[in-house]
Length: 148
Image (cartoon, rainbow, N blue to C red; front, side):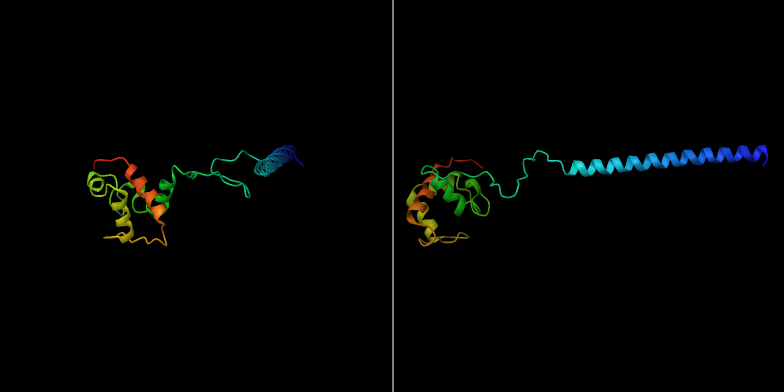
C-alpha cells in the first residue's frame, strides 16, 4: 500500500470515527430529551383556575338563597332570560320610566305576569305561586330606573 493510500485510509477512518461519535452523542441527547418529557408529563403541577379534579365539588358561583334575596333568585330563574338584569333583551326593560309608571305596584306586575301579553307567556299559579310572584314583583320594583 502506498503512503498516499495509507494517508487517505487514515483520514477516512478519522472522519468515519467522528461521524460515529456524533451519531452516538445525538442518540444519547434524544434519549435524555424523551425521558425528560415523559418525566415532566407525569409530574404533578398546580391546577389552573379553570381545572377541577374529578370528584371535587365546584365552588358555588351564584347567590346563596336567603329570605332577603328570594325575589332576585326567582327573577333569575323565571324572568332573566327575557329581561336580563331587568334590561331589554327579548322583553322590554323593566327599568325605564315608562315601565316604572305603568307598573308601579305589586298587583300591576302580578296581573301582567298571570295574564301575559304581547310575547310574554302567562305564568299560572301552578308554575309560579302567588308568594313567589309577590317576591319577584318586589324585586322588580326595587330595580333602579335607568334612562335609555
